[in-house]
Length: 223
Ligand SMILES: O=C(O)CCC(=O)C(=O)O
Ligand SMILES: [Fe+2]
Image (cartoon, rainbow, N blue to C red):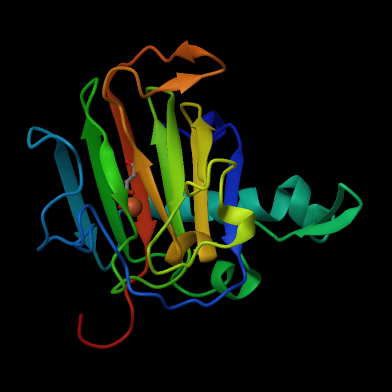
């Protein structure tokens, strides 16, 4: 895998309160070596590494910086959009205080999923700092973001029928997801690959093996 294969950056960021308690599948926090995996099948494989990362992962960290610095939004110094007469400022995909910390990441988890295996809705453990990167490889998929119970629904996050908003994000093989701020603390992410759930533009996505590499940084102090 080379960094050249990465196609684009999906930045998910919001200002808001940073520390809400996480909710996982049910109510458990997730993505902890000690917790039950939030993935929907026990046959999934995962590998974890803490501390000094292997060279290829350090290269991925460098790629994250490069991708943020050269992304369209960053190069314009935060994109400003007018939507229905309202000025919306799209923040940088990863705030600069997080982007330039050293090390950027010190924990990695590699997950492989067979077709129809996914990961249920969760907020990553509070033992990890803000600023999380996920490289999505092999099979395309749709990741859904839903407001966690800790982040109260507002008029903006309510769908027309009053149900909580569910935001689909299409991930190509090679996509990079960056989560910080509200997206990291107040929204759950999920990849439901059960039959009938991976629909994009009206068509079901063909499923193959999917691999993801998640990079995070542990909070200081005992974990
Ligand atoms: O496989 C993915 O893309 C998501 C992984 C994830 O959310 C996690 O490990 O916490
Ligand atoms: Fe996660």
